[in-house]
Length: 208
Length: 208
Image: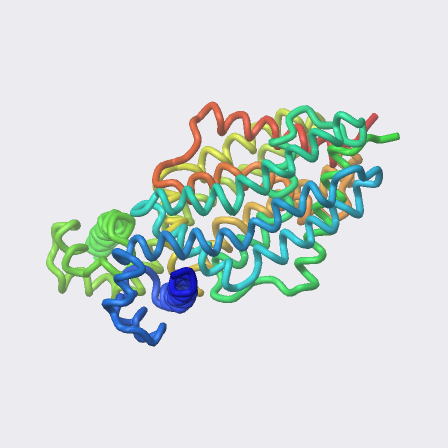
């Protein structure tokens, strides 16, 4: 029994990946369950065995892809814990955030979720919560620790986390969202990371 | 002749406004020229007299709405020019930016342009250029002036402009984009404005 259900889980996962490609390529409206079945090389009734309808399939795609970003929130406390020298750690986090979020597949899903947020606000909330809120909360918690140890000068850690991420991502993310392609080169992304860390520490660092 | 062409311009403008409603309501794919005609209470051939096809109509809608944001870039030099006390001026600008950009109609068009940026990258570029780049360029120019006068401590004025706007807008804009509604109350927007100005001046202000 266990082997069978594991096989089923694996097939469901493969179908989800195939469906993600179709949604990213066609958008929500122009995706059909027929194309999902064709892309996954299974029958349409099998697709319906895994996902009750297109909306549920979309929600699961978003949930699974947002899950890929969970590593980022785990990384924050690991990297920050016990550090005395915050600059290189923030630089590492900035680079990891920007690299993870500016991947073409993530950007395209980001765009797709946004495009459909009025119709499927729950899917939008779930993407925002998993993809943004968790990382911000993890950052805020670490900032609080650094403020307690007088390494940073922060009154409102969550606001500071928002400022850090906003300085880092506002421009490259918008450039990418409004152009068909990724928008920024690796070198440019690196410059945004360095600049955001420098400005953040100028504002929130302890001047000794 | 002049009166006739003025009447025609006015009718075209009215059609554009009616079409904007249809696009915002239905999205690009589900908007038809029939519905645009019905909403504008004119015949379909008349719609085609003004706009050669749906894509051109979409491009003109975006151009016209982005034009509404031109006031913001004009406001920057007016507000900044000659000021010695930068904090209240930045606070005024922050409030005006956030209020203008977080209007439901602007947010919905923002989302619509983003949603279709892969298919219509020129429309995406035009929205980004008119709606973002101009304001950033105006801010950067004013920041350069303030840096020259030693009122701000800025090496790269465009980057500083990006940081200012990123701290201001990243969180409320994403909240709005991923929820069906506006996302933030007026009081919250005001708090984002105040906090962004404070953090910006902590980082880029001259500590005397």
